[in-house]
Length: 91
Image 1 (cartoon, one colour):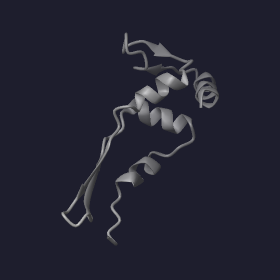
Image 2: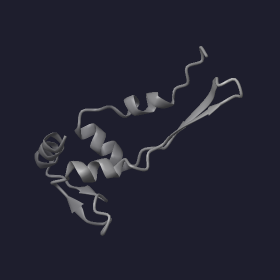
Image 3: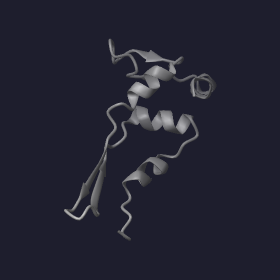
Image 4: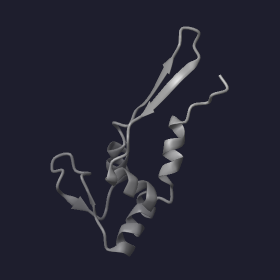
């Protein structure tokens, strides 16, 4: 993950903001796996069920622009993330 992300940033002469908790304005072109994972730590999927245990709805935390950039640079589509929110209506 680190290698792929760093290579993408280097190729585009880009930096990622907001990965340093001590200074959210600091940008880096060498993000660590730990910092990248922490960037996603507040992501949540909430599933509401009825009394019988059937899913009624799902809500997924929207991705920030930094999170979207990270996924794209790792070769992952944001639509993959959004599929977590799609409810299986067959329940």
